[in-house]
Image 1: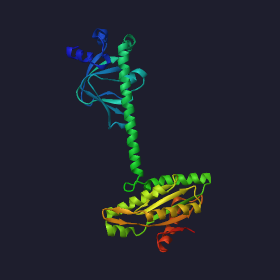
Image 2: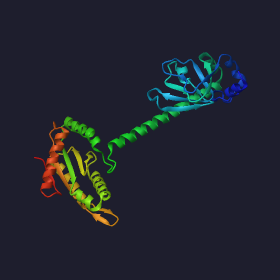
Image 3: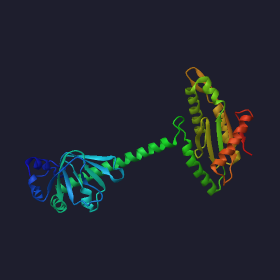
Image 4: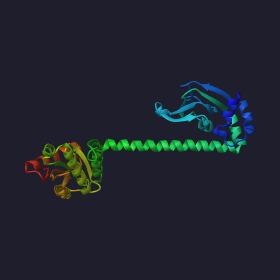
Length: 315
């Protein structure tokens, strides 16, 4: 073994704080290997019987389910293969040379001899495992955070901040099913901002967007915690009122209508108010979401025909 390799072995984290003389015997049974870029050192379908110390170069680790995405990168002074060596199972990841690399492969028996005869080696290996575990835990946290972020984006209307139609298509039927199972009354509302096209034509789309956000916020603040609100499309919103009979639904609708009518929409030197037309359908337990929306839409159409800024019930 050349002097440079020996120096690199002594500097490896596995032998941190140790006298090189205490692990000299290990070198008699270990093999130094050169890996070309892209060459695999470990893979899930081949058993591993060595602990691999990285002397030079770098290795990339890929999780099996994410082979196209690098999990971590390991550099000189680190080791790999310790988990499969300890638990006796196949490797759980793919390890590939990221660049020309030089590896010291220590056989299974020699590794356990080192662990059994040296508290320092055992402690260093535990420290390496703990570091690897912490890194994996952090990766899981980041993955979960990203997943939650994307799920939030997929279910939230970017302009108003309330739920979107995609979310509505999943959440409303589940709520309907719960109400049906529990024999609870519920009602569907479709809400439309009156003369919204005139707002856009008069003040521009940026002000129209502000009006939409104001209405959405005011509705969210004045619904009950267990009611479901979604932007249905354009200037329309859908509301599923759970645990609400017709009289309770009419009270909620009237509260929304009066609150929105009183809310001032202000920007720069512009100030105005908007009103709502609301259609309600009291529901039957076997009703489908599409039928409820259709019936509430018919009630909404009648509210507009009768002068807007009012609540009408489907009969």
